[in-house]
Length: 54
Image (cartoon, rainbow, N blue to C red; front, side):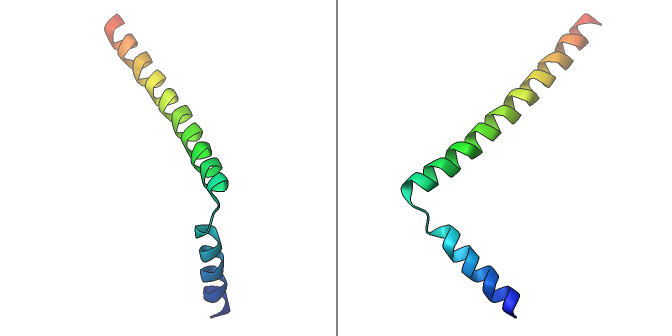
């Protein structure tokens, strides 16, 4: 029971972010996503290039 109550307390604290904290969190997510997107794009391009060689 205590664990559930502590989880709810932590969750409430995370929701009340200041604007600058929210921006930082959003920017970090965006940077991570663009790196992943670039990697996937590079892999797809390489596979298509190899298929065209055959």
